[in-house]
Amino acid sequence: MPRLAPLALAGILATWCAGAWAADLPPAPSLPSPSPAEAEFSGWYLRGDVGVGLNATAPQLEVGPAQLATPAAIPALSRSSLSRFGMADIGAGYQFNGSFRADATIEYRGGASLRSVSAAYPWLGPAQDEEAFHTDVSSFVGLVNGYVTPGAWYGFSPFLGAGIGFADNRLASVRATAAGWGEHYAGGSRTSFAWAAMAGVDYDLTANLKLELSYRYLSYGTVTTGGPEGYPGVLAPIASRNRLASNDFRLGLIYMIGDAPLPPAPNLD
Image 1: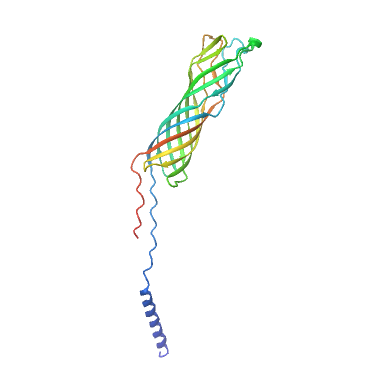
Image 2: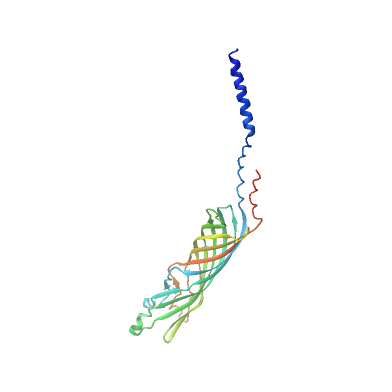
């Protein structure tokens, strides 16, 4: 026992010194508590867009297989062109989370002119005249769209999207003219399947209002005239045999309905 006394005394002194030294140190800093995740908006929204569409495919027009007097009466339509469209749409959608949203839109496209020239008629011989076709094109397009957003940086949210729906394409009446004579076709309409692929970016103007700039490739079907007037049983309607497509550039506003999410609570530790 006498031999253990010095060791016990040394242990007591060491413990006392360590406690005194620790009392002189500043308190250990507390670890920051994890900040709550930033709230994501979910709910309904309204949208509206305006833009311009540039023709992406050359319309290939042909006279339909009607009760023609002779197969040689079919002119070879060529050199077709379609001018740019102006467009406007409105729609409503739902923001499911920060990564996915979907909406439905109805759009009017108008102001485009369709022109084509036929290589005239074979039976006219070397003196054949070219015949010019001219009409105006308009469309109503309805789409259901989905959008995927990888994230947001400084208020900018890039996205990719796709949509499917329908296009009701209308041609105004057509006046086909050649030297000294002409033909007249009534206006016509055709409803076709439509699909779209999109890419763009949203920018937060306010907590509830976004500005959207986007590009869209739209495939919107075919067009046709009505029946010819003045040549019953001889001439048939003119229609496109390929699907029309457009490169669309759009600017829009998205209004999020409801209260904006609250910012994270400040860390008071």
